[in-house]
Image (tube, rainbow over all chains, first blue to last red):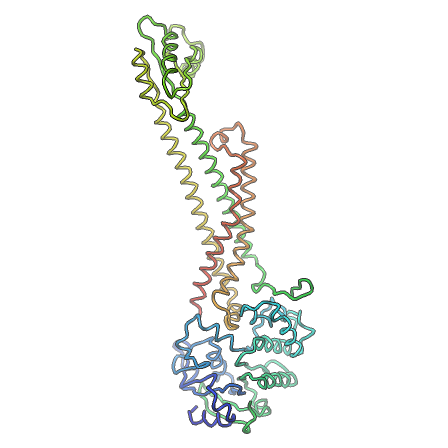
Length: 249
Length: 295
């Protein structure tokens, strides 16, 4: 995607977003696994703080790979990625945890820890950050209530429905109030009503300041949301569609 | 979901131990048992060697041969008197003929010893513990009194016993070192296996912002706790075995070679701590090295 389009996107997001430094910046990024052909090719885009974007494209287009580059699960083979103003290629291993704590991730397959209750799964990030249980117990309970799991706090993941697991995964991703929330097909495993409910959760999080970036192959859902989207096809960003000016905080 | 006093409390981040970790528990318990037995054995062997050395250093034997018309008994009595007057000698006592005969009887076979057999007379000398008289002192005094006598030099045996005692200790320390290394190797193997088996968990923790140190500490704590329990079990079993040897081995040859005392059993006390420390250090280092190789 060209730099001109980035500028257009920033303008579409309003004056505040266009002035702030991007949280995520991709410049001509490419990525391949081993000797395989590139999964991502010459990908460039910015995500401004407080923005809400979708990443659309068919299965196998490279959406998950692109998200993995943002949440530092993989490394690009070409180009430059900036995260919170830092060039990730120069990051030391010891610096990664601090950046990762600013990123909330909702995985496509949830990746909940089966031996931990819903409450313990949600409390994972503050615990890793070294906070004392007394300092986040109430926050976790409140968050689980907000995602509609007040009565399922003690339940183990295997006992939860698909929708409940998805909401639990969202709660786990946002408990530390990350600067950016990344979700990979968050509505892919749930019915349309639950999907709409989950989308509302993301919108509420965006309203309180979180940058949201959602990968989805559900073009209808993206169209209904009215949010801007990037389209990825065969590893190349091919299309950008913006929402009406001012719709994104 | 753990609750303590009605409040939520964090559950363990690692799943409960499985069968593979029970195998490791058993291995560490057996190694701890062997390590404690080696330690108890080293203490007892050291004490035995020390006791034998004390006996040899604290005494001397003088063989007296009668000359001219002097009777063997008279020569022995004169030698005892001469020796008793030397500085560094506590007591010198001429052994009766029957006692001297008793010492050589085993070499002559059954039956009475002929009365005309010129058996040498012996003088048993007890030396002072602080500044004992030397073999040269005793020989010089006997020669000065015109006695034909030979002082048995125990220093050869003392050195031999000292060497044997030291060797027993080195062997025990070598065994302990080998056991510590074997414990470390078993824990390192289990740590690598544990990390491989929990790859998903490790990745989720990493992506949630966990440092390598945080994850390594989880495995470190898990294996240290398990090694402490295994060390306690192995140490207790070794203490029981030592107590059994002490109680039921009295009067046996083993009790003479390994005179185990109740205080020797205390060698098993540090076992849980040493096992836990070994496991903690090894698991921590292995986990960090393994995690460092992950993307």
